[in-house]
Length: 299
Ligand SMILES: Nc1ncnc2c1ncn2[C@@H]1O[C@H](COP(=O)(O)OP(=O)(O)OP(=O)(O)O)[C@@H](O)[C@H]1O
Ligand SMILES: [Mg+2]
Image (tube, rainbow, N blue to C red; front, side, top):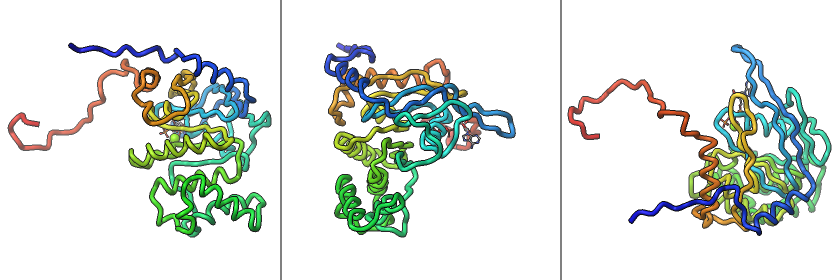
């Protein structure tokens, strides 16, 4: 006898989860995004990459941003980091308008951005020194952050001696060493294989539980978004707009075993619905000419 599993509504929250959200929203607003628009001029006209984006991020919240390719996720995070400017609207960090890059924002990108000529320890020390640190305390601080990401054994290794996951852990240590108010991550695990990625998700959850840092995290991976986030901002494309902000009903502390719980699956289904709507029709067929001579129908 076949049975279909009835999933709860993704908006249903257990009393414990509801209390957690209530407490989270009473914390100070760390980052405030107000009516952000970004337009690009191109040969074929004006591209509206972001349109009227509003959201708040609370202190120590883990907020993910997902959406189809080209919906403006990277543009948004570049504006949050101060590397790009909005056409209109503003970003406030601790109530102060963001104008240009600053040490109060840590960045981790998909591509490995370590200096290949510096050891792990020197890579982490670099940011501290740029921001005015010097002497023994810089080295000590660096070692402490390297320990936090579980890489003490590799502190004297060079980036080309590390795996992809290890490189991203150094990038996280380097970003956190400056004790930023906010950590901005743009698909940081996008280049990793599935197993390393799962391991990195678990590391990031552990780090976030132990450090006073607020995280804005961009991903394409729906499971990753549900597993890591307090809330998920779902964007839609052309123009990039907020479609829905989802409060993830999965209880904390999070772990990979929760991937098959009813509240996890119902949230994931909702994200799937928003990102890949069924009404988008048939799978796109490629115009590939038939290039095989085998005559039977076996495929
Ligand atoms: N410097 C630029 N000049 C012109 N258009 C740009 C520029 N940067 C981004 N765009 C356009 O803005 C839109 C959003 O791009 P963006 O890279 O932010 O998307 P994304 O959501 O990060 O995509 P992906 O998921 O593929 O990384 C796209 O249509 C892109 O072509
Ligand atoms: Mg992008």
